[in-house]
Image 1 (cartoon, rainbow, N blue to C red):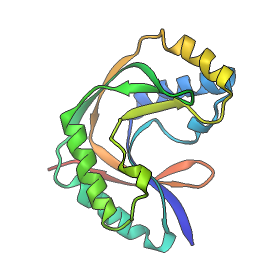
Image 2 (image 1 turned 60 degrees about the vertical axis):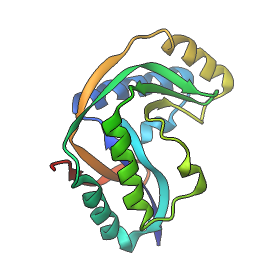
Image 3 (image 1 turned 30 degrees about the vertical axis):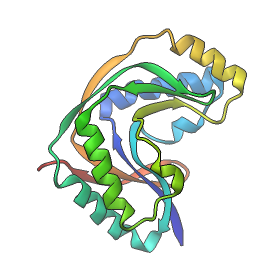
Image 4 (image 1 turned 180 degrees about the vertical axis):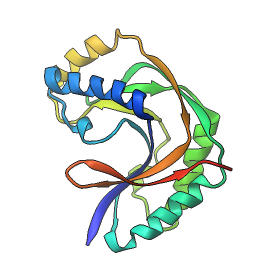
Length: 178
């Protein structure tokens, strides 16, 4: 049986809780609930299907992706959006993150043939609203969040493998400890 997975940098505790409060506000006032299904994160390998009995191979790939990297700083600043569907927190340009993304994608592409859309340019972000709202709700949320200020930095110290049940759940972590 196959399950759905993705690979991400999951934001640490206090920052995750702060961003979850944005997601809850957006779900309540603007009716976008889908981001509540996952912890705050930066996607490195978008969702893919893989046999559940092969999960250990995914965990090994996670460890391979992490083993050549030291922890690095990631800065978040302000809000932005993709078209009229996704509202997110911006991740500032970061060469270490870009290299880590490229390396991680390569490791996973060896065991999971990634779909064509996964070849798009890396645009790291932390989603707070997407897909399941009306265009009017999106515009209202953007009008408000587009004016807000937000700034934070965190240390990327681990990479996570998440599996979809009713919510996305972290099933494995690998520490960056080169």
